[in-house]
Image 1 (cartoon, rainbow, N blue to C red):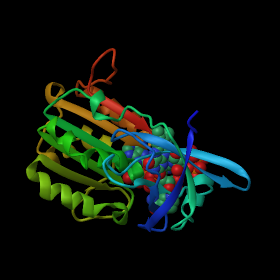
Image 2: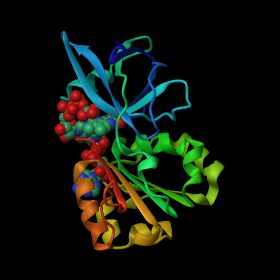
Image 3: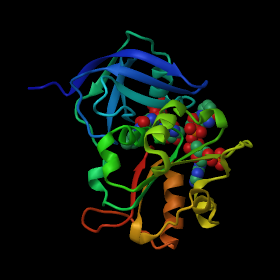
Image 4: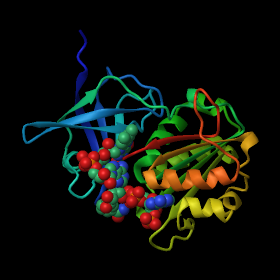
Length: 248
Ligand SMILES: Cc1cc2nc3c(=O)[nH]c(=O)nc-3n(C[C@H](O)[C@H](O)[C@H](O)COP(=O)(O)OP(=O)(O)OC[C@H]3O[C@@H](n4cnc5c(N)ncnc54)[C@H](O)[C@@H]3O)c2cc1C
Ligand SMILES: NC(=O)c1ccc[n+]([C@@H]2O[C@H](COP(=O)([O-])OP(=O)(O)OC[C@H]3O[C@@H](n4cnc5c(N)ncnc54)[C@H](OP(=O)(O)O)[C@@H]3O)[C@@H](O)[C@H]2O)c1
């Protein structure tokens, strides 16, 4: 029988800020679809501690990559932050999750809305060239507390270079002034129209699908505002416009 857990090795760890970091892992046996997550596990004080993390890499890239924030007193995220090149890390073999494009209807505009580390699965999807065949435009929205948390700028620049006006990248910074970002939160900006204004695209039920990922309160509050615009949750049994992934 195949083992459920694969023994991986840390290839590199990048510290973006005091709390945000990305880890590249060598575990070539792991297969997944862009947008999915799996569990990773460490032995902490003789106890296996496992949590789900989304993949940031596209399935074609050689190493797995996860993007994490160290949560104060969070057992796994604070331990992952201390890893270095060569350390062992277990990865659950079977990936999971519905934040994948083959679960999404083909529409003109796909909106990908994230708070914090919730941007990860969207980068995996957008780095996969086939994803771009399904939509006319992609609007990637990243909401963070501080400007320095607008990470992965190199990836964003590459996408912009490749896809030009088809790729719209909008940022929110909520706890300080930031020149090129919207202020406040995503749900309010849907309500008062500033998000549509910044994108120069309307959120219309007939040509829109929206993915939401990250903070569960953002998902809840955003869904309320989207419903006001006539958009509804997407289910396999009852197609709609909103696909979500709660991070806690
Ligand atoms: C499907 C799924 C995919 C996930 N993918 C990612 C990912 O790609 N990157 C990632 O950083 N986390 C992700 N998470 C959360 C992750 O699994 C852990 O919960 C997180 O890293 C904290 O682990 P912990 O053991 O330190 O603390 P936990 O005991 O797991 O969490 C403690 C508290 O921290 C807060 N918290 C947890 N995760 C986050 C987060 N990402 N951002 C802000 N606050 C948080 C919540 O209030 C939570 O109750 C995902 C969760 C789910 C369910
Ligand atoms: N970010 C940091 O500087 C930092 C540093 C160390 C540790 N941490 C810890 O890391 C964890 C995660 O922090 P995080 O900043 O990545 O994630 P977060 O708390 O989810 O915040 C990310 C973004 O989501 C917004 N948001 C929160 N609730 C929302 C809602 N109901 N609707 C819409 N938007 C909402 C936040 O706005 P608001 O700002 O308005 O809440 C912020 O812009 C926390 O436990 C935190 O204590 C964070």
